[in-house]
Structures are given as structure tokens and as C-alpha cells.
Length: 103
Image (cartoon, rainbow, N blue to C red):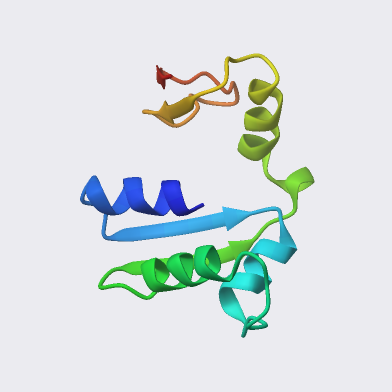
């Protein structure tokens, strides 16, 4: 999530919606965090980015209700390890994307 937020900011996007099917992640971003949490610095980095000078809304979504998230999950099993940047949203009901893969 930190990398995604950072990429969005550096790319000049100033209206961002973050959706995650991890309720734990969303709660870590939206609620107070225990000061002894092992990922405290990472959580604080995310919170700072979300609170920066842009519109950045964070939502929990059910994976079963999000066809794009489901497609991304399946895609993750078929690609090499690295950073995947999706350029365009899926076309119609098919989840086809133009993509760039960075190792």
C-alpha cells in the first residue's frame, strides 16, 4: 500500500480511492495503532500519505464483490515477481489490461 500511495502521489494524482479486502489493513490506517506494533513506522508512513494534501479515501471492500480484485488475485499467480503497473482499467466485462512489468 505504501508503494501504491507513493506512486499515485508521484504520478500527480490528487484524488485517490484506496480499496482493500484486508479489514486489518483498513483498521490499521483508520484507527489508533498500538505503539508496540512491529510495523508501526510503516503504518505511520501510510497514515501520513493518506492525510497529505490530496483527497485520499480508504475503503474496505469484500473480495467476492469486487471483480477487479478477484481478477488481480488470479493474475498474481501467473506473473513473475516484480512491480506490475496497470495502465488501463478492464474493458467491458473482460478483465484485459495493458500493463508494464518492472523487475
